[in-house]
Length: 473
Image 1 (tube, helix red, strand yellow):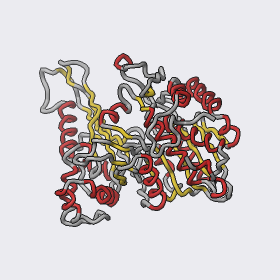
Image 2 (image 1 turned 135 degrees about the vertical axis):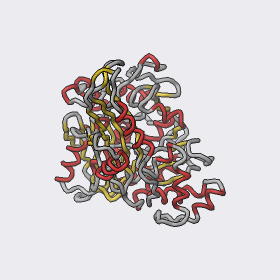
Image 3 (image 1 turned 90 degrees about the horizontal axis):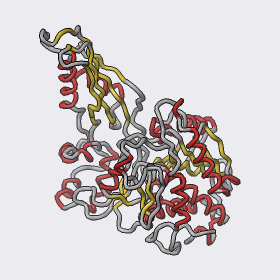
Image 4 (image 1 turned 45 degrees about the horizontal axis):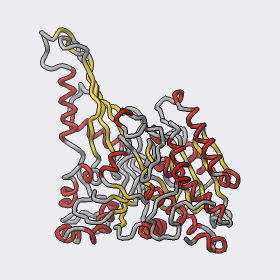
């Protein structure tokens, strides 16, 4: 069996994946599994191509695990040596977002180019590398005679980027019908950032314990219309613009939640002295201490941290009118909200009505919406993930947090004692901008970390009698 990394005896991981392993990921990236809002437009041929590749590349997985499909989504059951319990549900997704301008890419987005340092392509980070890394780890474990003590599920959705209704929703329903209750649910969402957290001079591993909710509110106005030479006091566009301005200028209140207070407490050791002093005045449960409002205001100073302490408001689409000299008969705007735990979709709608204060503006939800997930406690599963991350990348700070976006994890709410959204890859701000952007890629070193993380996790989940030498590097 070929080694997964060039120096498999090293710990922590300091070498990248071999050409053979890199090529297996690259072949998956060449499958243009772009998800679409309309199920009728699903890239069926590309998903089938990817399925054939996975089945050929990981023969032991497909010979020994039980596979159930839900459309193009794939749910694997790896039976444990002690039946009746489930240790983990490992999530990832096969679909990717579209490419805006392929001409701006260094390499074509679906060419799957491999060079000495990187594996290039749409999905290299989000999220095919996780699908392939989990399968690489399971294939290795099966070859080494390792079996989990309790059952493990691998759930690979095909429509995460369009809210997961055909994949994750159906797989989660199946698991609930099976009365599954796992110790750990692991999905995308958190990474190890380097140089991103202000004032911290070491990498930060953010192991997220929940995620914000999601809602898009449509504001719409209907007026009489007519010739622009004889306008009334306001046009549909003007009335709508005022409503959008009111929503944007009056955001929902700042609030320091318990999970963010815990996140800051864990980061305290790496913060500059003034920040450490301030956090000493804020308890880890996020209660309304004297310092909590000040901490929240400090976090709200930058968009990247404001999302931690507020339900965010983002006007994203506005349209109305047909010609410069014609009064518009209608206009509408879309405003996207990412909802902090403790707020709700209904609270967002109520807030919009309160701040707009105009009965001529219709306010309603459009598209998919989801409430904030439950936030699980850190617990032993979190500590295991933090330990493995620190082993792979020494010197990091490990902390908790919330996923600001939406992942398939929200559909699995209640199916695990602890939910962790995390991958042990080290990314800079420039790397983060490549996700859903131009020139998405993953380094060979980061891919090696991701595979080795899953190998070590599986070894820790294995029965003691089966671990043996195979579970050690």
